[in-house]
Length: 355
Ligand code: NAD
Ligand code: DAU
Image (cartoon, rainbow, N blue to C red; front, top):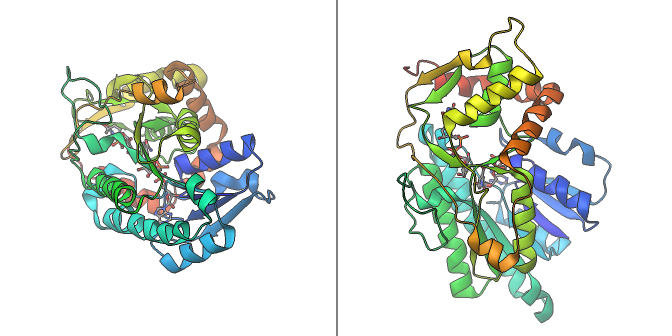
């Protein structure tokens, strides 16, 4: 079997669902169920014996040691993290605890387990660390996209904590020869995306008649990738990536935030027109910028394409339509995640934010 951490979150849950749709290999899912972890994402697996869910923390070495000894996974995919940049600005400590300290403890447990495996199994074992393009910092408008050799220049507590975890993973390969792989991916979107992030926030706010808060001038650029394409890239790297290597993953799909918001509004105008017939983009409001906001990210995904033959299957046009349709069809999921804690976050980040 394989061990997935953070498999109740956005990308992790998509990965778990995809994995079990394509393979009969069982999957052990370790998740702390923070505000971002949601068992409802995995409801379709309730009676599926191939999915073993454990509620726990990657920083709990006793627990991970016991799980590794009991289930003897052939690979670990580490999705578990605090993932939201704005939250890292309001409160960085959880990011250091999970992304840095948690990854360190998981690496230590893994090293202890892996070093005692029989030779052949030890050689085939893989630890895949899921990271982000944000570790590379911000690009100017005419700079080439991030390659794997781009210097690390993280700018937010989130990206700094992910950069630290990437360095630990690298060091465990260099020092102990642990067979690690690191992927650095651009912005994902798709089903089960928590509505604190740009695309789901815009869909959810638009439908509720609330303002659509665009930070600064809305001209910051992100490189968007449909989440299932990220999952297929991770599977490919796990199967064929060279231990010790890093692979950038992206959609070759750079867009300014304002264009993303306009696209969401246009799709909603078509699929769920406002009762008053007015366009959703009338709800856009410009609000104070995110402190330290990175201006542009762009991924050069040439290495994974050349070496492993991976390319995204979805275009932005097809992926964003599927995404908006998913949110319209899953309004119960949307209302269930908008708990009191979610409302507290919205008040903290947007309430009193100057326009
Ligand atoms: P998410 O916030 O939606 O989910 C994170 C999951 O990890 C949640 O289920 C949460 O409960 C769990 N978790 C948090 N702390 C934990 C701990 N200490 N132990 C065990 N589980 C814990 O995040 P996501 O957007 O799905 O991102 C998953 C991974 O992919 C992260 O490592 C993130 O840095 C990386 N990434 C995300 C994107 C993106 O666009 N969302 C892009 C590139 C890379
Ligand atoms: O690049 C990969 C990263 O993408 C991941 O590592 C992170 O985990 C993930 O959260 C995401 O980070 P971003 O900061 O790019 O995503 P977010 O959805 O928070 O913001 C996308 C852009 O939209 C960013 O430029 C900020 C802007 N934004 C965001 C929100 C929430 C707004 O203008 N208004 C908003 O309300």
